[in-house]
Amino acid sequence: MQTTKQTKLQMILIILLLILIGANLRTALTAVPPILNQISDTFHLPAWFLGSLTTIPLLCFAIISPFVNRLVHRFGMMPVITAALIGLGIGSFVRIYSFPALLIGTLLAGSSIAILNVLSPAVVGKYFPSKIGVMTSVYTLSMTVFSALAAGLSSPISGVLGWQSTLQWLAIFPVITLAVMFFNQSVQKKPSANTIQHSGATRQTKPVWKQPLAWSLTVFMGLQSLLFYTILTWVPSIFVSHGMSQNTASLLLGLLQLSSLPMAYLIPNLAGRREKQAPLMLMIFLLFFFGLGGLMIETPSMVIAVISCILLGFATNAAFSMSMILFSLKTKDPYETSAVSGMAQSIGYLAASVGPMMAGFLHSQFNSWTIALVCLIVIVVIMTGAGLMIDRQQHVFN
Image (cartoon, rainbow, N blue to C red; front, top):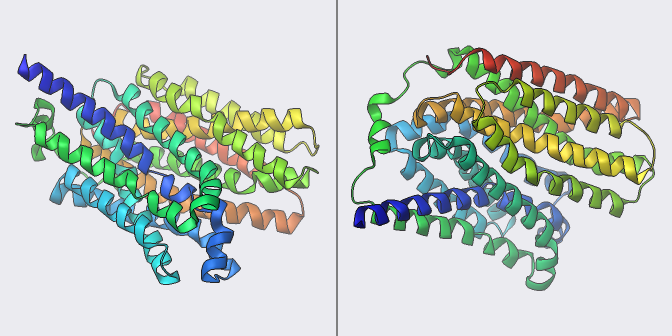
């Protein structure tokens, strides 16, 4: 009876840990854009640097991700996650004190989140190998909810507390997560059978860069990242060019992010129950196609704008959630998962940092968003092709 109670407590703590890891994946980043002007006024920052506060973390994701698997091999998964949470807490806390501290804190937070990005699917695969769909939805839904709350509340809260206190309070998320991790370790008297199963003897030794399926996953991950960050960056400007006000465009962007919530739950659950993902890939293609097609209609029609935002909200989160669960479904243990996740996210976030610049350049050259949107639809076609190829092989490492 005591063993059963202890096992249930451990499962509850692991689920809580997944929720908290999801809460840490974006809050430190999405809270910044709404208060950029206040940060700029305090530190007298040049205009060019403001955009880099969101670009720097993406570059950290690209640079750090390939090395996460090596760290896991050497130190173990949970110690690496612990170090990442400590780094995220420190980075969130110190970045308010000066311009150099802002830069260092952003680098530290971005690097720490990069590690958590890579290892989140590995945690699911380690502790819930038979419930990958459900548990992937737990942390992706948590990430979506908390990132939206951080983006929506940082400005009004900073109006009351000041932007410095607002950002510092975000350090409470990694602190609480660390407390749950330490409590979970204290109630574990011995390793579970699942932990033994995924010990060093099962670690992958084949180079992940030489696996064809790993490249299909990488292309899918990379292009969905490019699409998401490009859409997130330019959707308000596109609506303004259609004759809408800046406030209306901002509200529509909020609608886009809010409408993504259902997919954070549905896609991992649906994908986890299927052997073939082709129907879901085609659904994601159609959501992107009609959503981007709606943006090409140069009209201030609120109906078309709302429908387009809802479709793109569905599409972007469906593609992201599909990427995350495929890392777990297409690998056999946490070490394989972290290797594939690290490779795909490295290239993926590098692509994400290029997408917004590419779209902005095309708009400046043609004085129209049509060419940029057509290019995004072509990217959707390529992404879908890579997604359909994923069904050809059961696992990355056979």
